[in-house]
Length: 149
Image 1 (cartoon, rainbow, N blue to C red):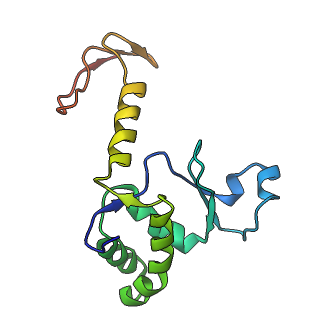
Image 2: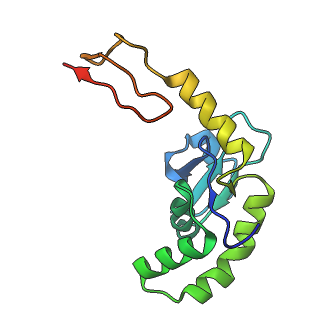
């Protein structure tokens, strides 16, 4: 894992407040109020519990960003020392990268998952969707379609 390589959370990763988990699940984990669960459904990777500060930093990785950029943005928003944040957060980021819960944005895993989502969730021409009619579709080149109500 390089600090200058754009990283991101896998698109299927869930970052959920512990309070949003069902009661029977909350009883099985050791977590404090305000903590978050980091999990990938249908994955063999075990879920992780992180505190609210770590979750806020991880939210920076919803889109491709380098570790340095994420730490700087996070630190500016909270008016804290970025060197201290990097020093404290780097071991966690390294572990998450080792567990494939934080991946290079160009990794085959990210590309494969994005293709799967595109193919399984795309709406077809003339499909009805919540009182809207799709007249044309967005394609891989980013050409946008029209919707009618």
